[in-house]
Image 1: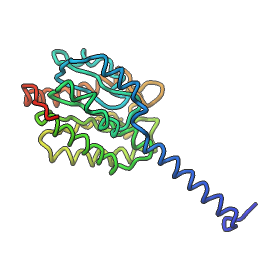
Image 2 (image 1 turned 180 degrees about the vertical axis):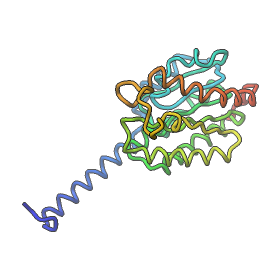
Image 3 (image 1 turned 45 degrees about the vertical axis):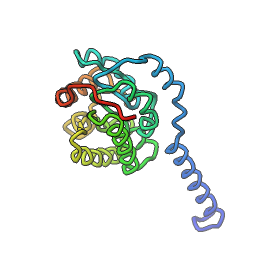
Image 4 (image 1 turned 90 degrees about the vertical axis):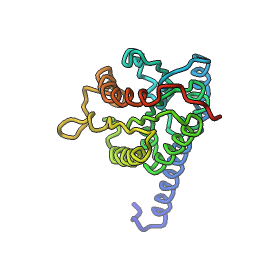
Length: 237
């Protein structure tokens, strides 16, 4: 067996490091075009439909199939797709959000990003890009960001999720047209661990109980945002 300082061992360690870097780079800088088929399907579903609230982001939004029942009297549109990253929602904003001139946009994205190896600072930069595009195109529209959730299957990324939440919470606090909703803390038990009863068997996505919790946490913020934006905004394309 070669000692740790043996030239061959050093070569193996360097090769392993290189492969790890390459793998991380590939996962972090995934091509948004990988979602094109799904985006085209979503766009074709509701051509010309106006919505009070557009929900956009990753699979936790896509799998929220009870939106219309959870928010009665509000015209909601689900634009969640795949296991997307926040940068994907930026890339497809003009096709998924803009045509529906929402008064409020609810965004859930960032968890997959951290799991794929992105830094909290990178997620913050993508959040800023999304918010900037929203404010530019729909200047009266309110942005609600749902924090990263504490998925049991991603326990090793929990610190990254917390830091991401802290960074985006601070960003929202300085913007009167942005609201940060903490769903992370209410999804923990008294011992600080994720509440298992909120998740399906993959320990990543939520069951009906989990979505009921999200609904209760989001409702007051959504009502306040809708009250502050009573008329559809003017588009600046």
